[in-house]
Amino acid sequence: MIDALDRVEPVARQLVARIDAVLVRHGAPADHQVWSLLRRLAVTPSDAVEFAVALDPGAVRAAADRIRAQIDRYAAHPVPRQLPWSGPAAQAFAEVAGSLAAHLGGSASLRSAAADPDTLLGRLLATASYVDDLAGWCVRSRAAMATTLADVLSSAEAVILWSTDVTGPGAARALPTDPMPTDPTPAGPIPAGPRSTGPIPVGPVRAGPAAVPPIGVVVAAADLGAHLLAAADAIHQAGHRVLEAWPDRLARLPYHPPALSTGPGRAAAVWFRP
Amino acid sequence: VSEAFPAAVDALRSAGAALAEVGSWAAGLDPGGRVCGADGAGALGELGRGLHGQLVRAVEARAAEAVEHATRMQDAADTLAAVADAYAATDDTAHRRHREAAP
Image 1 (cartoon, each protein chain N blue to C red):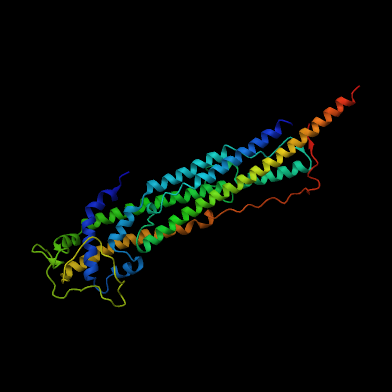
Image 2 (spheres, rainbow over the protein chains, first blue to last red):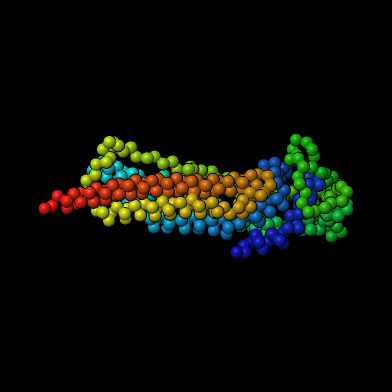
């Protein structure tokens, strides 16, 4: 199903590539917030957008649906707990059958959010719920990135970047229509000092020999890059909340066999109820 | 009583078979890491791999639990079937002796 990100990302792709190109080639003001985001996420704005684009909530949700379909399979085959007989062997069978049924999970708990988590059914439901949670995060992440890209596309900073050649020889030179005044003291390329995140992979944009861009272009790219990376940071934090909320409920469930109240010597004795 | 045993054995075997199918089904469930962002770069890709890994481990755990419990169900069915056979043999012997002792 087409969503907002599918529509806006192709429109914004070239602009985001320009943001990357300016950041990689010319850096950003030393005290700009884009630096902390680059260090924390270790991705360029293009990487962040590509990450959101790759998320496929439909495929994830289909997996959750397939997990839930198994619940009916469990419910269709209840474990018999009672037989018309009595005696030590009958009691032993009832205890074993009761334990097997309890480990599987009662039919009353089927599809219930309150199902006992320490049953196979409870773990199956928890697994489906985790995958649902994951799909929901994919949906929210894509929507958040779409909104951010729309903000970026409609920003004044985008106009500055569109008005600047950052891709050809003598890149990042202000075009005649550049609305921003040329600043004689640009921020300069990304320094190799302690604030640098190190080399950042460049996307498809190819730049010519190093050129000094107007400071307005550098600041605009840094602002837009920070806006995109802040959205990615929120997506990252939300994803970690999903990741950390589930491990206990998804762990493998051990089976504890019943301590039979009848000894093996008496198990052969069976009395059938009339 | 004699009909209750086969019915219970069949019920246990059916429950075990259903669980075994869950075990085999789970192996093909993985939607792939890319849809969770596992192919991404930097911390985002690391997160995607974590989310996808958790999904895979959970599904593998469900499959293993189901297969193990299927085996327990089958064992219980086998035990009950053995008891039912022993009961039937004892019943036949008692009937035969009763007929032989009759005038």
